[in-house]
Length: 136
Image (tube, rainbow, N blue to C red):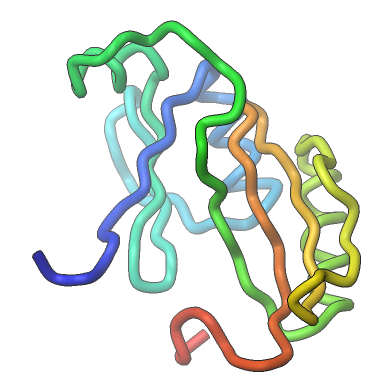
């Protein structure tokens, strides 16, 4: 298996609300698709939104259960100011603040928000090295 993630698909409860959050609130470019799914082109991968129950059915797992899913999506930015700006943009779009942006124990700066379905996003600045594509 080649080391890459082609697409991250999130199971959502309200497709319209989630599309509005990612497309209109965060400015992710949406691709054409059927109404049952939404795709957003990211830099080097895609983000997919699909109905929560339908995604569970597709994977043949139970749709029951909520809470901490054991992972967070991360978006690295170039400065502490950009961390603050990105979190404010997400909050304005309907996100919920999970952890205020602050200095970290590893020497960086980060904060967390939850999207409309409770998925955690970390917005981080790492002053030691860049994590992500180099062609932003």
